[in-house]
Length: 135
Image (tube, rainbow, N blue to C red; front, side, top):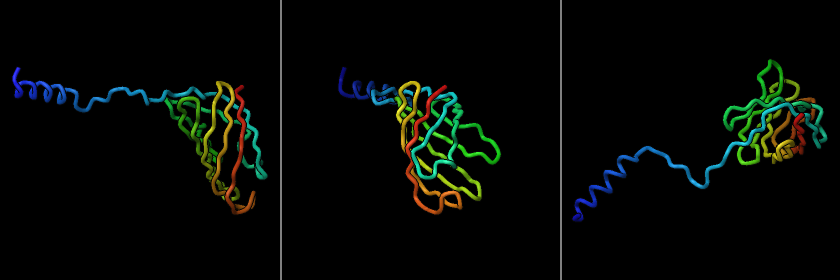
């Protein structure tokens, strides 16, 4: 095979694989964190946060059920961890906290931080630690 034939063979293979994504060793698997959790917080203002999480999962995406006037939690579960956002849009207790938790198969342990405002806890930055145990 001459150089031109070799070039055409390589170009044909490259073109045929165009747009395909191959799995890599850096791909991370989704962790199944779905279920009902009892949650405790270490925070001076913990009364405003959900005491129970019912996590619904689709692929790696996680969320709590959307209910009128109820705080929400959304996140992404990968390789034994959960990156999450907790939000509350009430006019008296506003917050959006973002953080990470480690998952051991039954318990999520982590931290989240962000801005809280309103008469519940004042206007400030908040850091919470939480433990969520699956029932």
